[in-house]
Image (tube, rainbow, N blue to C red):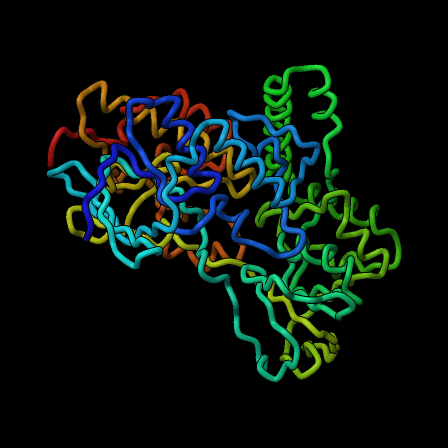
Amino acid sequence: MSVQRDFDVIVIGAGISGISAAYHLQKLSPNKSFCILEGRDAIGGTWDLFKYPGIRSDSDMYTLGFSFRPWTNPKAIADAPSILEYLDETMDTFNIREKIEFQKQVTKASWSSEKACWTLSVLDKTTGKTQKYTANFVSMCTGYYDYEAGYRPEFEKEKSFKGQIVHPQHWPEDLDYKGKKVAVIGSGATAVTLVPELAKQAEKVTMIQRSPTYIVAMPAESKLAQNLHKYLPDMLAYRIIRTYKVLMQRLSFWYCRAYPAKAKEKIIDGVREVLGTGFNIEKHFTPNYNPWDQRVCLAPDGDFFVSLKKGKSEVVTDHIDRFDKTGVKLVSGEHVDADIIVTATGLNMRFMGGVDVRVDRKKVNPNDTFNYKGMMFSGVPNLSQSFGYTNASWTLKCDLTSAYMCRLINYMDKNSFAFSTPVIDETKVIEEPLLDFSSGYVQRSLSELPRQGNVKPWKLYQNYILDLLMLNFGRVDDSGIEFSESKN
């Protein structure tokens, strides 16, 4: 171990969540020293890591953008380079870059109640040495998936395939798909993004799906936002369009849950209207689940459907039997010819970035804890986790989490408390899964995630308006949290 470095707060991760945490600490808790530890050599998290063609947001940028800095780019659905530019400008505007230490991978975080302190073991990737950092409070901004590897099931006889097999999370920069036949396995947001983009250069792109996903065409640019920016100051225009988008998201989600049959019919009718005749809508675009049981995919300006209509791409709904030399053999007996196979099969969730978390020398098993206000965990002092919404933009929740973290830190300072610990009486709550979502990446990971209760503050509402009321205006010293000056 090298010389110890001490801070009031340590933020782990320099993506959207970490930048939000840094901004709020500077604004709301300016007397606190902090740093951001980033395991990679660049900012941006997801938006820097993924390099596959066409990568873009699957939420509108008026809610994926920060609450404190307007998104003025005409693109409502933005590509990764535009998002990274926005993040870079945000860091420079608020002098956040100087707080980041790159190539610093946090491997272990140990809490001492006696010292009211977290001690972090941090691998410096440039030297290979482990350093020690301490802080009174830790803000986990590590995202929700494994940055090392995506979900990649093994397919029968895949080694017999003579072409190249690629996972979007590890896209080769020199991959040449021009004039090639490409098979994309999957039907989620990544596949829906990849298909029309690959089809611009490939000879033919075939999306192979086991079952359909809800896909909704959405304008790539917002005329309302552009008009507001013409006549109003940028921040005022941004706040108006952001509020409008939040309300429309909530209304849409409520309608889908309250009237699932009608919502499903409306979405499918929209697909039928865009595609017209000649497509088997029932087979390829009618899911067997209700809207928002899984995340709905967006197609900016209907690009996915445009590609299908031009004949540059196609959708095949079937199960894979095996790979062979020239492509994919399906259970139906149909064969998909391919020079390149893209396995857009999803992500692996990784809670707290895989950091080994210990409280008073006892290892924390996330599934033994209960979520507290969607950001802390029972029995774990002075630690928050930024975790976005499954049914809305990630940043909406992260901004709320960062602001509340500062409220909590300031409250402890004002009342001379050293730390705060969520404490639950499990006899008074009914346990529920943390996420009511049928997506594969969620279902594969439920046993490794914290649990939730059926009442606040132990329930994760997935509702921005309810969270806004609870985190911005609710009591800090509620019945779910205990404050301490020293070890209990």
